[in-house]
Image (cartoon, rainbow, N blue to C red):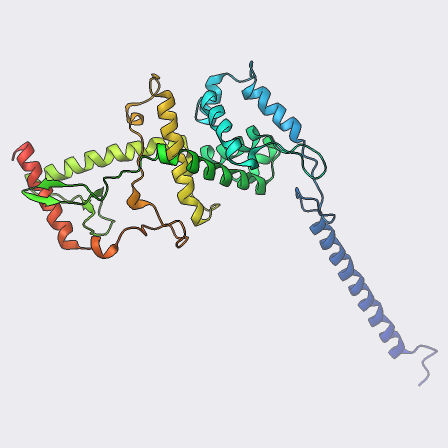
Length: 338
């Protein structure tokens, strides 16, 4: 049969080749677009494959200085106190002691000869993360400091604060393991903590009654819950001052959480010492926080935050737990009557 010069098999093959070429070219375009998008990731480094944002560190320092640290700042000292959680005099004193302690906070030129971040900018970045629990990358818009540098500044800040002031302002008690007291004619040699029913029945924890029956249980629950509220109120002040204590800790590694908490307690106690005679300090703030030695995890042990220094075999005795609570009840009855 004549085909009038038309070869259907050749035409089909040519069409298939065209389709294949178009698919291949489309694949190449998508691959190139993806590569170009990857190469345009915002980054503060010097890699030739990434776009570098020209952050003006000098202007960032000058802006911060004019706003808060100059002789005639744009914002009044009361705004500094609210936003930095402390008076400017205390902030400057801490900065002046941290800079010689850690050379990282000194303003130095980088490899291109440009001045790096000032100590005011680095410590402000750290304080914003503690006071407002902001993510590290939020410091970029105002302080022009990238996320990795913000984290580094915060970690070095809490390391410096713990080393410079921990011994003085954590008030580690030397009497934690030497305490002695008598209840209901019995001698006890160990501290205990007030808690509700969700905690284990250790002999270092005294729980209230969920449904107290009778005068003696009601008196015990009333006294126990009153003291617990005092503690919770004091801790609430710490949370209000440093939001990082109240917010989720998803951006921190476990080994950092304990150091961050200690730093907040140290700074809180320094603020109380600095402002103790001011009228705007509530009575609950007059009592500094204490970190007992028994609660400090080993420095070179597991990274998990746990009570590693307490011997669980000693405290995990439900019988002693119930006996202690019974003796406290009897003691309260003697003090306040039936």
